Length: 393
Image 1: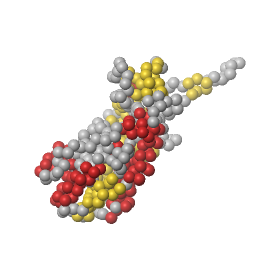
Image 2: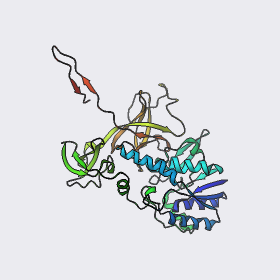
Image 3: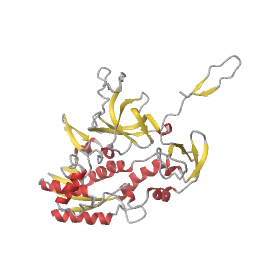
Image 4: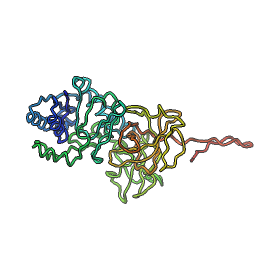
């Protein structure tokens, strides 16, 4: 099989090359360059390319360095900055997979091959003639949450050779194969930044604007911040406040206000209802075949409502799952209801939806801002003008 292998210079993609080579496939290696040698960061490109070149030489394989810098800037970078300015929390790595690695790359180079392989920790399973994105054997390294926005067409052209291999075994295989990067550390952080600090990047792009930090329970100003775009819901570190821990629980974009709550177990940082918009189902929409007679129930949650589907889900990259339900709203969009408290629900991030047994990743949707509390109008009494009071329900 002719396979395009996306290599990064890291140990994971190198082991993919070794594994597929030993299986006898016709491999062509590609390194996607998305940065330039300037303030935008370069993900240590020169060092990575040198490592990829060593891997290619070891196996006698062709290596092509392709540039998608402009496409990355116009799509992923622009999305990131736009989302941050709206007061939301972006997910650039997810968008990179969707639009760059399996978008522009596939359209220009990948489609010429039978499959495209990467070092992601995930799997592709075929069930009843359809492909599904499946979780990896190593729950700590599982990266299906980074892949949950790819299309079915993209998924059907991908293979993830490391899906059934624990990370510790990958390191062992790299050593046994004498790979030049067998002990190289895994890259950390957001890819396009390279060695640039994320807050430094935001400051270069958006500047600073001081504003108040308010304790949400009391309305008391307890500090100053440099701009709401430097903070995300659920954030604890980097607030510079004494007497902590303090958590960011809300942001007012219009007035540039950051609200925080104090304490290790403050209720203000938790929630169980997660509104989701722009829901993307990878293989199929499970609601398309849902009827009142076949609506699944979850005995653990003792839910009797129909029209809800039992799921497991994540709201951030973590080996931990939550259990709950997802349902469609009549006015559009979806709602995820968790069986337990979820910490730091950040609008702009994604709710990643899985089957209850956590084996298949069904898709993802962006967490939206909570709906504003409705205001109710009191009945007009004798001689009184109608008054409007907030509905606190």
